[in-house]
Image (tube, rainbow, N blue to C red; front, side, top):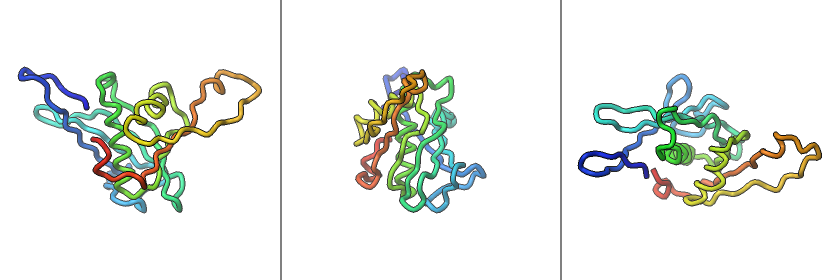
Length: 165
């Protein structure tokens, strides 16, 4: 867990996540999800106020099966390399579980940071299912060589208490 340095030593950082539609309506169940405008904002408690760390979106993959996937996850520039990224993903997984989603998938376009998060870091806490073996393309272009697979976490096997904050 991320910690902040104080004169008295180190203390735990308190996070707060708000999951809402673009029109600022709080989302409390799966039926309130729009197909692509569902944003989660993550905040950290400062001395006097809450400071924004970053945000991400949950998009509907399948309404019938209740599958969602992450998209546009990013930290603010001044919050990078401080250990807050994993907590943003924890907040996304917690939000998906709390609204009743069955699975949460990774984004279709993972970069080196989010690909590493799904492939290595989240596996320390969850049972992350890796990508299926894809057929190698014959072109061998840069985009095909650098492509990450699609990961998912089965949320039916988790309880809200087992998800770290």
